[in-house]
Length: 183
Image (cartoon, rainbow, N blue to C red; front, top):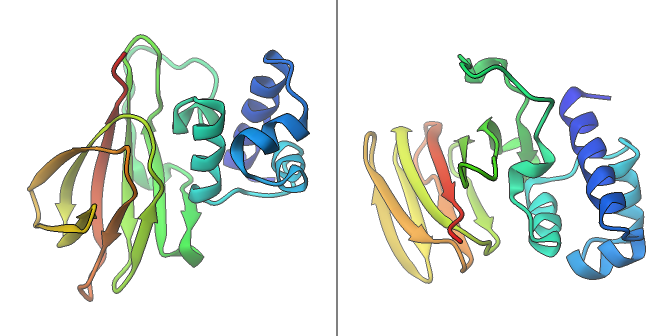
């Protein structure tokens, strides 16, 4: 089992048990089948980004709550290339959890690689989303309004509606997402 898969499995199991929820209850809350939840919790399935968002929304927790490993030192230097990504859209949308959610800080930071010619639909979720383009050209569709973002440009929006990340170019787009969870 991959390390990320094991972390997700452990965190989902802990959350479910801490709340006294059955797999049936979690399936009802999230819209993810009981069988899939059992496979994820037993480390037999690596969930897609979309599936993990459904579970996070249903349980009303941050996305990265599933990616949180044991406590780390106060100073962290991270090389994104050494992180294990969550993979969606047949390997065309890779999400690296750089700084997972912490309740005292109320934000989380991801790096995303979107391969050429790919669109990724992000389900609505809680929080204000900040997108910063590291390289490439990204088109962001929020409620039918399209924004073209170039290297070193940024945008923020309320993520409570479906939004689409689009890479119409023939080069990889890498961008950072910061999600801020207000009270």
